[in-house]
Amino acid sequence: MTTRTAPTARPTTRAAAINTHCRDCIADPGSPGHWREQVADCTAGGCALFAFRPVPRHCIIDGLHDDAAIAIVRERLARRGPA
Ligand code: SF4
Image (cartoon, rainbow, N blue to C red):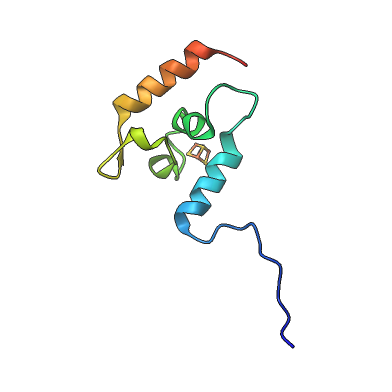
């Protein structure tokens, strides 16, 4: 008889680990926007994950962050204000 272990909720890829870390770091269900929009709005440029942080799909061009699209997300979040 084999013993099976319960599946864990731990990420299994580097990208998933970064996504989980950024989401845990900054996402707030009480604030405006989807968690990826909130992560896009991160301003911690000194963070080692900043260039790899998950952002909405439309904010990525050729695998790189599209700063113009991220700026639009930031403006939209600022207009919505606190929930
Ligand atoms: S990039 Fe921003 S959201 Fe992601 S871990 Fe760093 S400070 Fe947090």
